[in-house]
Image: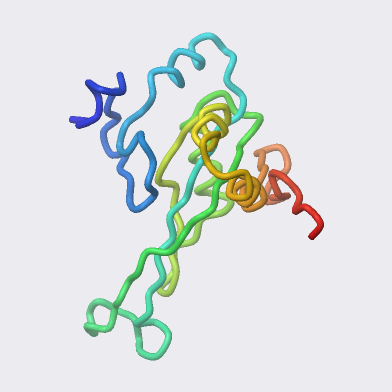
Length: 157
């Protein structure tokens, strides 16, 4: 059960968990996404990934069987996905096109929201930090494959 469901009017989708990204909808699926999907108005989603690095793979085998796995959380990437109708399709596309699952590095989707919610969530952030987040995010689409231009280009210094 989603612990935040009463306060934030959210529902739980089994199996969706937050593994390190500090966001208000941890492990929950927002009612507004479901409503907009039903209305056919949804086209862009923010899919946030989490990465893990296996420090044991740098100098040893990195394998659990050898007792040499040492995983640490690292920041992921925000992908703004267009040309899909459902957040599930956006998450699956990001997983297929941009995620990694190797002995030394793993990247996987961990948090989902609309582009509109992502922008609203950062509205109270410092302007420089908002700019940084937008510069780090990537625009992607199943129609363009693995192309991933910046959501917003860096400003000249």
